Image: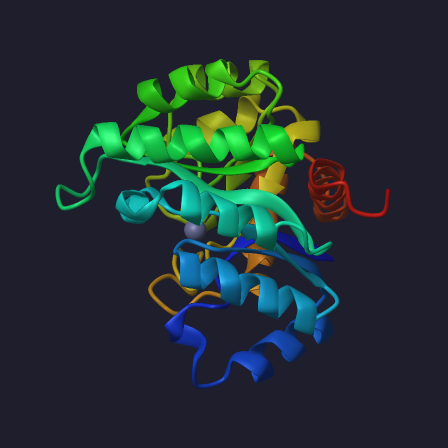
Length: 255
Ligand SMILES: [Zn+2]
């Protein structure tokens, strides 16, 4: 069984067949999905999806790519959306220095901090997006010691992972771990304790081998679990059980 800790079923890539895909997931062993908003519209649609399907939960937040829109009014709308009982986290939020056309770093940091404050206020975990911004991300996480969450699609070093673990964060593994030459992330998987591992699609992106390049969906996580079971020397069932336990623990589901 699978719990996808990071998906974007609100994405336009699913416009043609969203309902069919989502309904099909249950037959393929997917028992839970955390759908993460990226834009304000995405956050709204994420909450709608989680209201429509019992096994979908939502996170609301503004991705660093859209950091320029974050102001008190937007924070207020996120606060209101988070009143819905299916909203289990604030995300995805963070820093992305990879694309030059992204908002300036100061604007990204300000938007990130405002949303970390919201998470602290609402006592919700966060879903962190960090691309080529490990140092600044870590500095901001440290400013909010009461907040925990997941560093989604983890792309840092073992040292960075250790720092995140110390702060109480979980580490999210995507299909990247199944790619040939994915040595760095395999090293990270070796050191992350079992009780901090999460699995995720980041669909429609990041499809694992053997489906690399195709549109991703939550049941493909079986290939990520297979790879982690090899790395950790555990059975597939053990990895399935612990990753489901971990995400439910983080999102406070069934408590
Ligand atoms: Zn994402």
